[in-house]
Length: 425
Figure 1: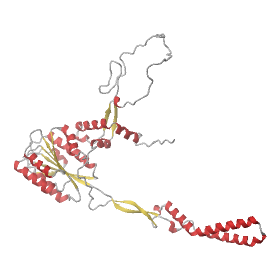
Figure 2: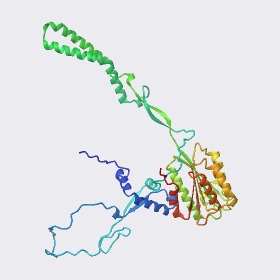
Figure 3: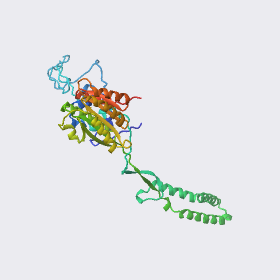
Figure 4: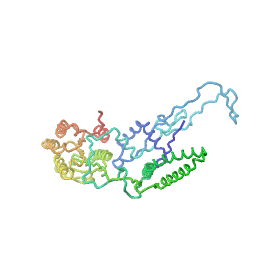
């Protein structure tokens, strides 16, 4: 019987295989801890690793042991207090306490510590986005690609010394020698057998034939030796050709209402959602661009700092932001080259007459070009005209448009998972 032991080590000198097995076994504990961490973390810590705590009772292994009963004889050295037949009382209190949650010191002197380990940033994001997918995911090529990679494309008879394929060259040389000397070797074998027969007979009448055979054999052997072991046209080279590196890129539009009704806590909830979406897109596309659009009565494209922290306020006209997004798409992001995603956060306020315009802009100028558009209404109040207009949009574009309501930060991660839950066939 053969045993294969995997002794490959990762950079931290731990078994990568065993670690993956451990993560699979305690997946439910880790997913719960990750979900709780997302709710508690600050925005800047969203993409870091996490310490996971698992109760010791959940990682215990089954063991075989002797049951009670039978006769046991023990020798306890240094005993000056007990005699045969005495009963030794169980120790009271003072047992090893544990640092676990709810499994610490007890009146029976028993306790259990939680098992704590660290998962990496990549593992944290894997669990955070597990079972999620981007609707209508498309991999579009970059226009004007400038990056290439060399790929193997077979064997060539020409090339540089550094690309010589030794095995194929030796195989070619061996094939050539066999082809050029095959008939000679067969004839040589026949002559050698005849010579051996005549020499064994030791007949004086055959001496002339023996000399002729030896001369013919020498000539054949010399001809075979004159065939070069390696010729120039035997040498084969690895052929590499340039292939463009396939890229995929996406642009993410973040649209946020910054009117007077949007306080800083509401903006912080919106920022958390935008960050989750950005991290999720990064796992599906190699190149991501983010466009920030803030609006009140008018809209403008800004950088991230101004998007989240500028104190400019005013009324609310949502269509100004949607029209600006459509203009930017036409100017900089052709739909045939970019995967386009939009996310809008608002508290639901809008001029009543403007909600119908929003419906028209979304259905006529945007959603036919987008992979996905999500609208978040961050409020605990009743829905207003904007929500009702967007409900009509959802009816017309059920696979491209989604909308959800958030009340506080605890709703962010559950709502995000609802929006991007993997569809079952």
